[in-house]
Length: 501
Image 1 (spheres, rainbow, N blue to C red):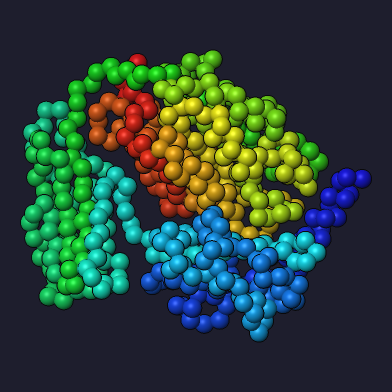
Image 2 (image 1 turned 45 degrees about the horizontal axis):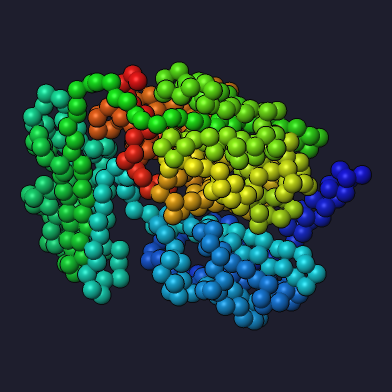
């Protein structure tokens, strides 16, 4: 009886969300034109300062003004949103100038809207707003300073080479390094300098300069600086770090090491989630790499795969096992499986367990809110690394007519906690690749942890080095189709020693 009732609700939901005209449309005044019925909106020019969400009749007529909620990049945006009547329903106007932190960011932004009618029925939709994203190598330091009155984003520097920090070998006192790239600017460029030497402009009013130059780097040098200034005085600079490799020697990293590794390929129930090819295999392979090569003791690694990874057992691992790592210990949490929106309430986002049930998602899956609360209460470690490979295509009744925002919410788990670093396997609009031989993300996590991520060749792999190496390798192997994202504060804390421990 419960199954029949659940399926009837889902059928009604599908009819409501898929079989009727749009309830919401997005309009960006700076782009001109009408409201858009599109899941993804590209913004080619300057960042918009105003977003208009149209709530359309007949739904809007049954929704009170105060029952329309908006979120921008996962954060409630009620205080910058005003609702008014319109010829086709209601308009929620979002004024991004009202608060400094409530702005569009370079790359992919998420906008969510939910309207609840007088009968308690909820209508939800999200949009992806893609803005111009500067091409930045995260190994390097970037600086931009705009001149007074400049409404552009200043000069943009894209480096093709080098791809990583410059490292002199243990016996090298000097090294020739090829620096290649492009400088572009809305305003004509005034000067471009590389290592204090001028780069010739192609013409006096050039907006674009391509360069390819050899730079001599000396032992003891800490950086190579590339700088561009436009005619208005706006400045952009890129600092390429220079390191000296150290002689190979055993390096010991203090503190214990703990890992909670979860991978779910198989799911239980009549209307179970689709099988995943490599989630459980990835979990076992990562656990083996940590114990065989990275100094983790088998008793300090908890692996939950498939039927072991029930809702209760996953919560138990998050609550209890995670707390075993003390303040000075390293804790790694890896979760491979599904991240999804509840088909009955798409505004809610979850991680699925082995026994997650269709129609009972709130009771059988782990909500992002519960995940944050649980980990916040249980983790004592001042060095916790959380890794998620969860953005996989859904099928049938599990789908919702919305973008999957799970990775965006995971990256926001601990934005102000310097002791917790989070990495997701793909950007919000991308699926994470997997195969019977193992997932792309997990394979590069393992390779990078085994020493390939040691960019400055100092014998240890830091959090930043690990994350950057994985991100770049996944991007390269997927030909740009999968782009891991991460947040971290304690970037230079060592994770793994390259030499034997």
